[in-house]
Length: 226
Image (tube, rainbow, N blue to C red; front, top):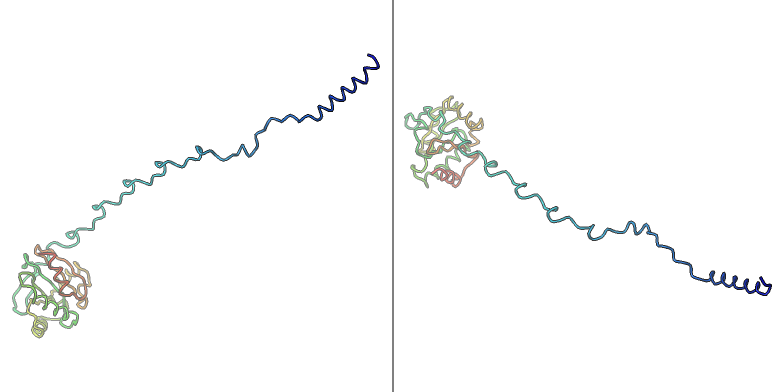
């Protein structure tokens, strides 16, 4: 190679290297970033649960007990139908005649447990007197039974006459007192609690609320068994 060409070739090589050094660097291939890898889910992957999936339990699945299952015991199941003690003999202290509560079948009868000394009983009998002023005997009868076994017919008769009460009064026998306690509980033998039951036309007995009973209350009870 000629000595004259050597400088030219060196200059050309240097020029090529300089140009190469000044050229833009090649853009590297993009590498997926971590952020891209954990990008938020798309709308498709975020679909809310369908209406079917969110349905509440059906009415059938939540049904309450039926009326039959929730029904209270019938009144027939809660009372005695013509119990045997209705046929126990009693004596009307005003007339001396014997009678039985079962004699009044076909009529509505209010039967009150009393004692001659009981002021609560006296107050209740005065309410009964008002009731009988409003209702006829074919609508309701009353019988007062002395449940204090220490009292006698003479004392009870005087009590009725003194206060002007003209319905039937009788002193309970020990057997009847025991039967009443068995039927209604021992409270029925406590005169100040003003015990009373209603005898319906079919011979069924219905215990009324303890305590004083107004004319309106008694009338309402009577109308339940026309």
